[in-house]
Length: 247
Image (cartoon, rainbow, N blue to C red):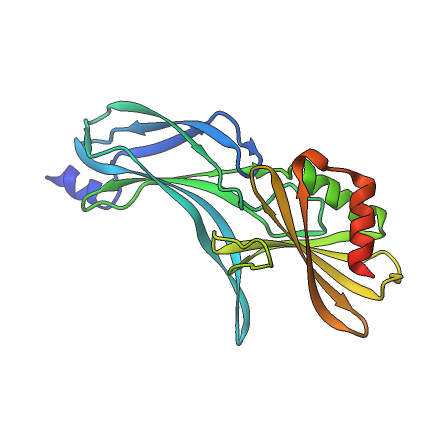
């Protein structure tokens, strides 16, 4: 009985550990993992496993802003089962990252973009033993080329963070409840009178959409967008497209 009481507050309870094949991924990429469950001091009923793809989002309010954890996607793994005391179970798992997963591997002066997987056991009357695994998320070729085009046009990436909310443009919209903003500023006075540019990328299977917020010195903020087809990624053409949008 005493061990049951301890297990109900997480002492000597079953634990979960997710071992990823790789932590280095792209948005929309498949990943594989092994979920290892280690039995505690007593036998326990497990109602199931849950894995969540998480990020940290900035939330704006009247007093400023604050950050909170946000679930991008969640997977329910397996049915109810029992894990015996000191038993070790291994469950293979495969899924695909959400296409709107924020990028983390960015050369920005201030990068507040974080992504991780959380795996938890659903145990009656017990604290949820949760395993957290950080992910390294890299841009696809279309995004990398767009970022290189911004550099060639004289803009430097100064900040990256993830906002709570949705984006909507003429031919695309987001669905994950969050979106990433990459903030660029000109290295010197811009020929376009632009003080700041914020890019938000929305990848799909065969193309990547870009929503661009322009902060101009005399005309205020404005939005433009473009779509990059993945089989037609060209640095020179992207530079020309961006120049036309900025003019």
